[in-house]
Image (tube, rainbow, N blue to C red; front, side, top):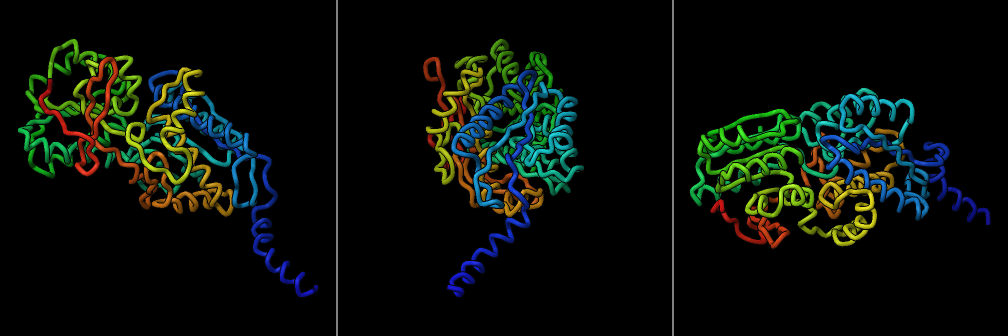
Length: 413
C-alpha cells in the first residue's frame, strides 16, 4: 500500500508543480478588445467583434475555455470598448485595457489604421498583441509582442495580382498598369509590394502611380487622370468606403479597363453589392477569401456551419456575413488554442503558445502560419473575378492555376 501511495504521489508531482507555478486559478480570463461601431472602419470592425462575442458566449455556455495552465475550464470575460474609428480614442482605450482593466489577452481593432496605435502601446507594456487584420509591414519590425492572426501580411497579399498580370496578363496583351492607393499602412504596403513585383519582373510598364488620403470620397478627377494614361490594367487599393466611392464614380464616368482590381468586393461582398450593385461589380478582379473558398478545418466550425451560426446573431445587430466575420472567429480559435496550450498566462507563455501553433493549426480560414516576426504567411488569398448572376454575383478563382475554378475574362466588358 505504501508503494502504491508513493507511485501515485510521484505521478502527481509534475501537475502539482505546474499548479504551484501558475498560482490559484483566476475566476475568469479577461480578453481586452476594441471595436468601431461607427465611422470609416465600422464595416470591417463590427463583424470581427460580433464573431468574437459569439464565440465567448458559446464558450461560456459550455463552462468556459480549457486552460492548460490550470487543467480546467475557466469562464471568459470580453471587455470591448467602442473607439468609433478614432485613433486618438483607440490609444486611450488600449491603455485603459492594459493598465486599468488588466486584461489577460489583448486583441486589437480591425485594420491597419486602428491597429497602428495598439502596436507601440502593447510593445511599451510588454503585452502580447493578438492582431486580427492589421497587416501593415512596419508592425512586425523589431517587435516581439505581436502576431497577425486572420490574414496575410500586406507584403504578400498582392503577389497573385502581379503574378497573374506578369503571366496570363502579358500573354493576353496587357502592357500598361495604373496603381491608385490610399496612403495608410495596409494599402500603402500593398502598393509598395505590387509595384516591386511588377518592376522586378520587367514585363509591364507602370504608367500611373498615385497615393491619395484614405478619407478620399470623390474619385472623378482621379479616374479621368488614370484614363488619360491609357492603362490596360488598373489596380485600386483602398478600404471599403474607398472602393464604394471609386466604383460608383467609375460607373458614372463610363470608363472601362481590361483588368480592374479592388480589394473589398472579395472581402465584404454583400456590402459592396448593396452599395455598388451587380453591374458595378461585374468583371472586377479581387481577392478570394475564406468566405468564398472552402478550406477543411481541423479546429472549429467549417464555413457552412459558421455561416449558419453567424446568421443567427449578425443580422440582428445589423452586421453582414463576410470575410471579417471569419477573421473574428479565427481570432477566437487562436485564443482558444493558445489557452489550451500555454503553460501559464504570462505574456511570454502566451507568445510561446501562439508561435507553437504556427503551421499546425488549420481553421476555416486556412493554415495558420507565422514567420519569425509574427507576420502571417499562411491564409493566402487567391485572385478571383466577379461575374454578374442576375441581381447577385458569383466569384471565380482564376489564379494561381492549381486553385482555379474558372478562367479569367480580360475583355473589360
